[in-house]
Picture 1 (cartoon, rainbow, N blue to C red):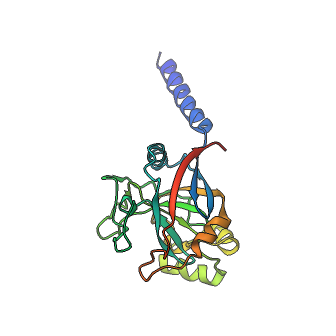
Picture 2 (cartoon, rainbow, N blue to C red):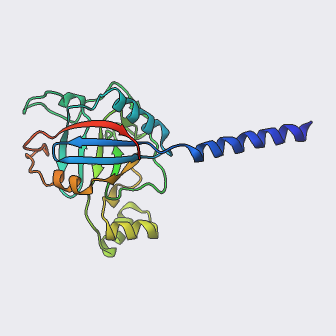
Picture 3 (tube, rainbow, N blue to C red):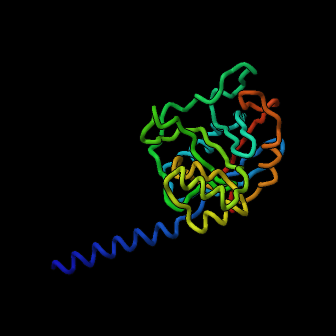
Length: 220
């Protein structure tokens, strides 16, 4: 009987693993007047994936703004306070009334095109919980091996050979690795990302023209 129970438990666990492997990948299209960006969401970060999909289904993001651009770094959006806001509205602090527990995983890093959950800083947010709706997309820049070695010393950590190759050939923001939940990546529309990143900004990083977004769940 004992062996039968163990066998049943093992089969149950095996079935769960197989089900996770077969879980379909979800995609979201971010629509802007400058073109569309297609995002693949990671199944390895289920809380962030499901929250993002839920907000997209609710059309929560429609007509919000990409409210912050840091050249050669990131573009950020998803602040509900950006809906029909004025030029003087302070953006970046809005949220849907909740945070998400961090899902920071090894193997997910700040490469060009990464979709990342925004959050408050470590001093007020030591668990690195994510804002419930705000996100940013990484553009970054390419780094030399010498620059990556310096960042490793500063972080007291090491990059994998894969990370180094990606940061040297594609770019990203390696100094931020391991600090934020990365829950997706661009699969189409890198040219649109670069077009948006080139829009001039005010001193606070807000684009000089409003960049409205709309989102839809799409098939691969």
